[in-house]
Image 1 (cartoon, chains in turn green, cyan):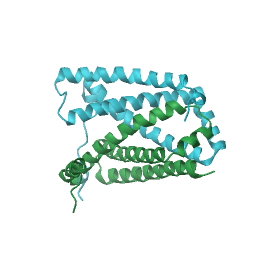
Image 2: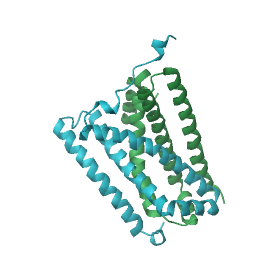
Image 3: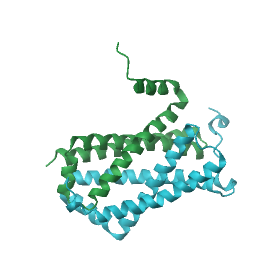
Image 4: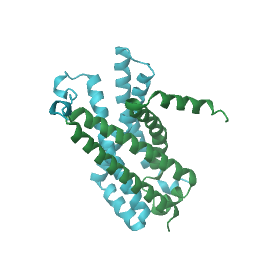
Length: 128
Length: 136
């Protein structure tokens, strides 16, 4: 077996250290870094294209790099949001059954909206 | 499960603390995070509208381009930059950097100042660089 690149090994070790209850803590950090970097990319895209026509956005969305970066950005942001929701619910709702029910519902809703965003991006990129 | 096991202790509520920059930024991180979830839902809807075609896209543009829409978007821009910058501050703390109290205050004021500067700069640039003149 080939050895993974050093930074990938570091990332694997990071997640190996955070099993169980601190897993969410680790994912929260990883998605934060992704959303931070891609968030800067995304805000620049919006700055350049704010108020643009639909055709202009289509040109933007047709570039493979933009599709990939947008989906990664959206995924990281939604995953980060789901962990944040769970954290808030955990802090303010004492009833553990009720709390998990709310957290599950919020995860489901966020996953659905993530799917809608991805669908929109793909339609914009490949639709006519 | 007994009633005692089900009722777990909750976080102390905000009323317990005296207001200071540290606690203010801490709760602001949570509030902006929650607000940005709504922003994320709006982003999904906007993307979906764009994907559905010019009709839905133009409708979305009219709604978001109204003064109320712009006000909401301006608020989301503030929340976005605050959460991003303060999040970077948290990541620094995770690496055990800047944890002395004077540093915590300094980075706190820096986050507030940069939030305002970045938000105004983003809106200024968006208006200055009209999309028609930007070559893709």
